[in-house]
Image 1 (cartoon, rainbow, N blue to C red):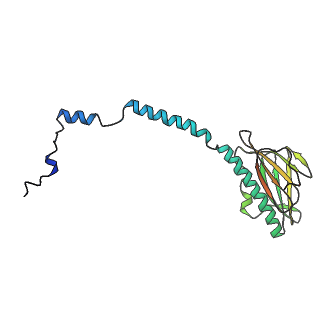
Image 2: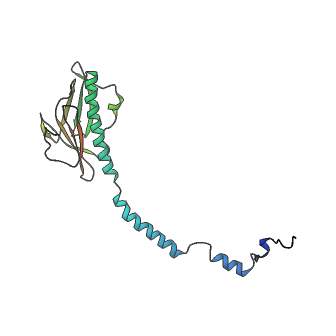
Image 3: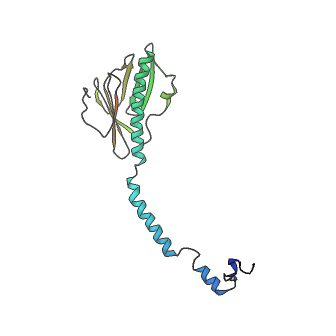
Length: 195
């Protein structure tokens, strides 16, 4: 009965390491050739060349993020000034490329307690190209004060941000209702009776 059931391993030819056939069979299957590796590297390089230009650059992402951050600050200042019945002033410094927020108490500018206003609002490589208000017109240098009274934003404002690669984003804020929009590009004329 045991002779009928032979293990399958007995039918296999066992080769020793010293056997030349074993060494020849093993050396043909143990890796990639230089040509195969070169072809794979060329294919990966071509795919990278095609895909990388389609990915968004960090400059564009920084510009978009800065525009959204600025619109968030304007909305938050408007809401905060209305709910706390406190006046705030956002200073847009076109010369130093800085945006800061001050709280107005008894006519004096003080630092607001809210840590949100202590952060940097513009990413590296993003500059303020110009600011337009209904009262002052379009300004490309100096400091522009944007006041938020107890009723919210006091004046129509347009801020054009410029990225490192000459791309632009526009932040538009309307005084009635606290509406703030972010647009890609640099529109020359934005009407004050905007929908």
